Image (tube, one colour):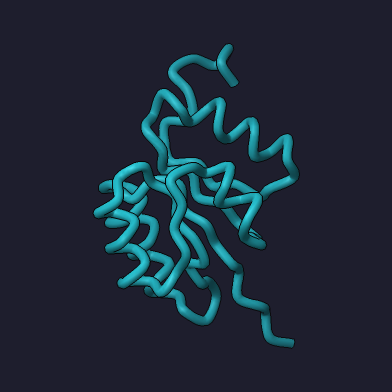
Length: 108
């Protein structure tokens, strides 16, 4: 039985979100499709739309509420990892969070 491609959303299109995570997902086209990205910078959103053929958003909340996703990659700035990841997990999303998840164990 063939595994369905996981519709993936990526939060952040900086070095980690674009050059690491998106690049890896592109190498696995039978397993993943980049369905959406969220980034506050317009040039990054436009580049992602052209490169991946995806939808882009300025805010991750709008991305997850507007797009059916199987996986969300959290490549936001490090200080936002815990609150964004917790919000997504509480919302029932599968999340891969860029490291570090937190500065201290107590934050997790």
